[in-house]
Amino acid sequence: MGFIKFIPFGNKTPYDVRTTSRPEVQLWQEFTILRYISGPNAIYGKLVTAPWIDQAKTYFRSACKLDWKSAGLLYYYSFLNLAKAYIVTKRSVSGITLKSTSIYHGLSAIAQSPSRIIDFEIEIHPPIQNGKRNIFAIFYERLFDQNWPFANTITVKLSEFIEYCDDISHELELFYGIIKKSIDAQSLLRERNNQAWFEMVVYDSQINTVTNYLTSGSYSIINFNNFSADDKTNWLIAYERTSSSLANHSLIRFNQLPLTPENRNDQYQQIRQDAINVLTGFICPDPVCNLDERYWLFIPKANTNTTDLHWHPLLSNYLFAFVLSTVLRYHPHIFDSNQKDSFIAEAWCNQSAITSLRYFLMEFTNPPLRMN
Image 1: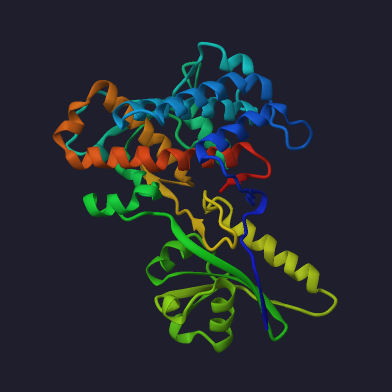
Image 2 (image 1 turned 90 degrees about the vertical axis):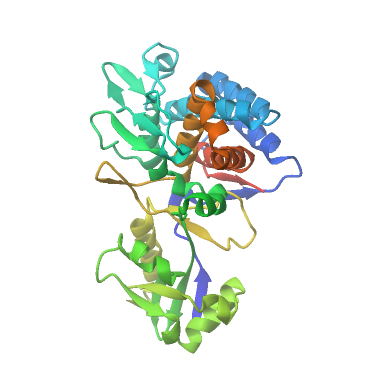
């Protein structure tokens, strides 16, 4: 009997750094450092992208000092500049193109006055349209290394994606009945009776959401009433849990592989790789590091225009920032007529903007750098 704490991040495994500086100060310091790094950890186009990163920093740090009704606009332009720099580092767009007039936000919104901000409609344009390169769809493609699935402009509501904004999930549930989409999960590699396997634990209410993306026959479900003594002991020790905290959870146990003294290392490596393969595109590190990595995030797909999309919380925060920038510029009356919307917008500025910056830094750095 034995266990190893293992999270199948693959090449997204974060490197944690601790700082005594304010988070927004140190995060921007790490972005600035990127232009001086050489070797395998260097980003492509580090000098070409420096002006856009500097401008993003200027917008962001100014936003931190302002009322949310001004800050929301600046946060979006900060993210826009970071996205521009990011797609250059991933070689989707050249530095010459970035400086040209053929690159656009890739997002637009028609004049509208929805009764709630979550009903605000956004137009998302394809990566290339009429010779124009559109940043949001290209940014999506590079986050997941897969094509944006829509050939034409699509219209979406913020409500289709806002459930991935974890920082304001409490407010969203209270005001609009929207339940957060990301799932807090824990995982182990376990061994018993010359068998080894990968397993994860999630709330019973979320089991079907996770298994919807797994291949039938590749796993089994063990509810709490069927936990063996070893199951309870391993999970209680690994994550310092109590029995009561596991009572409304179930295990998703992946197929077991036989162990012998000769194949032990190879089998464990296979188990690790299989878990990474299955969960790639669904797994996301918590953006704030903790010493024992208590939870990681399982991110279900988003559905829009009858299409399921791999998704990332950063994309939802990016779209929220765009909506804020549009409403604050052209429709500020929306906030005056709905105080809940105002509260949500202010809460997002106070919490989600810094989380978005953390996510951006993890995407720019290799290994992903996470700040605490």
